[in-house]
Length: 436
Ligand code: SPQ
Image 1: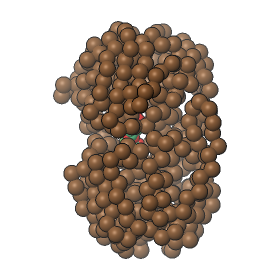
Image 2: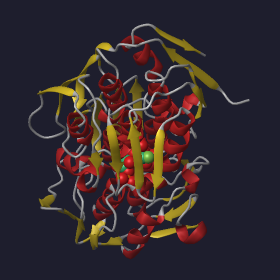
Image 3: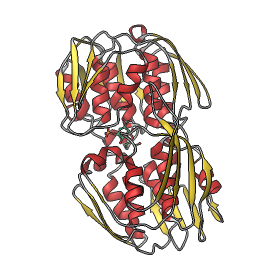
Image 4: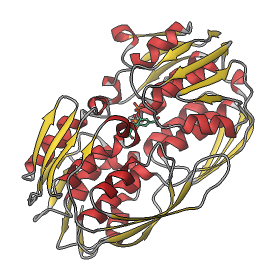
């Protein structure tokens, strides 16, 4: 029997302050770079969601000592040249970031390993990473021309390359840069559209002298990483669900403490502003590492917008919940240039349009996006999550605008990126009813 959760609201108003869990992308990278480096790395604010726990498991199998106490993590590594070949397969679970970045790391190590994933990850394309890595001499073998997990990686000496990225993907960029750390010579990666730059920032924090010139990043083979302290800010992609909730419901105002404000991730704030929400930002960070601060989002009417081009990588994971928001905005919202949504945990274009239509939304699927006609009154209904955390959370937030209850199928996938999501929803919303 499919596990379900029913969420029902009666004229909700969202108010108060929350600190969302740590950033998923940054948490993965902190464990990865801490394990590549020799010495001790301490991580605070780590995301204890399922995806990041898979990354920890993998490095423990390679012989790195990692201790976790809630959101505090200590990594003590002998350096990647002392890793051991794992006895068992390395299981990345549902995590595309774990799988793709590990391919870049393992390819230049001296261990042999088999990388696997769950039923959803096993359908996601890996050739965007394995093809360029093979041009660096990597040995990666598996089904469908090494496009699908499981893949066998035989680590070895790599050669540097200059890679012009055909798609905007931080996972591809990061995998090549990680491989470049163990390649002979200088590796460069050039992007047409800027993707999230957590890897570049964190390499600098670990003492690697990368060069960034316009949209090109260069790394020298043989660079040495030194363990350090990493502070992970709150994940703006998780905060986005409650930012949308606040913007969507009359009278609402929610404050987000310590949330990441890396400009390569803040497209959601631009969109909320364009759609009419009131936004107040107080940035607190300085120096190396990730910017963060306090953000308050308040409802103030809602109008349609267009989302395309360079903005897309800055909010790619927020598009499902932005589509929901657009159902409540006046006018036609157009989302385009977002074909990448089709190769996420599920095809998020089809999933979002199918599920929101069940509630009465007027939404059309296009090849590379969606067109949403608003505002529409939403009804209750039973929505599938497709095992995709972002679709599951979108369904829960839809209940704030719906006239009836929403039943979410397979809600446990939400733990991938936001353990405690329903508790935060209950905390912020006035007059809620959540049934297991
Ligand atoms: O890790 P995974 O499963 O790929 O996670 C997602 C998500 O919604 O949490 C995408 F499905 O985020 C990716 C994001 O879309 C995380 C990421 C990263 O940490 O580098 C980069 C983006 O993917 P991509 O393909 O654009 O590089």
